[in-house]
Length: 469
Image (cartoon, rainbow, N blue to C red; front, side, top):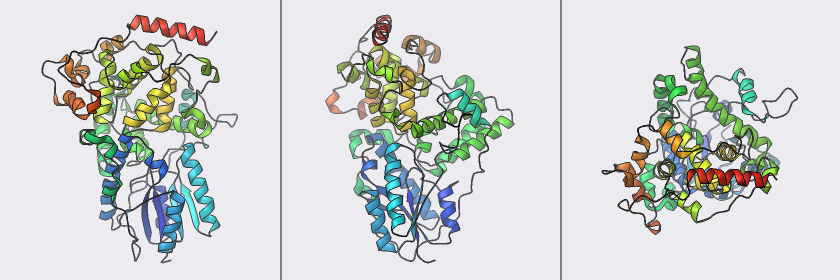
């Protein structure tokens, strides 16, 4: 019983409501928390790596307060785990499940190899409310449409959230650890690192506080106000969910309490949490969703590849104010308002006829709340090629969207320095974060639109007719 268990942490950087941790504590063995910077993790986008660095810093402090520590190692996951077993005499390895194709392949290989050595090798739930295979249609298959999925999930029991342990049993000897600073996770952000980092709220304590503040305040008006771009009407929990700094069960139970108390926005908020579940449900059953058109007939659509126009979109220089504000918000904060994501994605895929994967890759590079399933489903939903998608002829008009959801232009003024006599710090910080090679200057005139909105709509509809011919 003195041989430790290795706890392989990934996107579950918390102690609260942690099924894998609870199973490990039940063993009575010393626990050895580990995070591995493997090639799959190193391949994440620049903003994700910056956010990971902040998350690991916060989690290491959380473990230290519980009498433990976080061991950092880098290299192929299985090789690192096997080396740690040899160094520590560990009795096994436990981890929380992930559901993207790369993680499932890596984890299955690791589990088989560790078991072949006679070690305990177990995965536990914890990233989702329900395992993707646990929610089935009446015919026993996966759901393909959100509304019936929501109706099925709404009444499924969700296990109570587990309390965080006060202390973790430590091994007699700790193995050596890499230095987080030596990993240089934020290096790819270059001069934008400090700008983006200032907008993050990493760590378990911050996530739980965020949930409490949201539930006691903006959740009540969530259904009516969540689409208004300039209002603090959303929870902001996406970055914390991405790295598992808060569990979806903890969020669900707080939201459901709001439903029972008659909170008008609580059920709408829970639907958004289940939208994330639906995305992972689909990715588990249809892993090609992240790279291929969900609907094969869309393979014939005349998408444009990357281009100079797509580059202007990436840089927030399209000449459509709400689109540019959205791209700049993301570049400065690492996040983008959900309504703005739909507007920006529609403009790229429809007005500019650009392949949705061009936009998906840019979001993967720039979002600190990057979620491969939710973002793939979101991009394909807007483009029209995905599951339960909006029809292609639903083309968001940026001007009318801005008029409806930013009626006083506060969101646009917040992010577009060129359209304001005295731009604020956030608008100017975009130019401080952008690469020198972009040669951006807030004193220059705001760019002219790349294409008229009516012209872009007609071109998109003509392309639809051509692609479906």
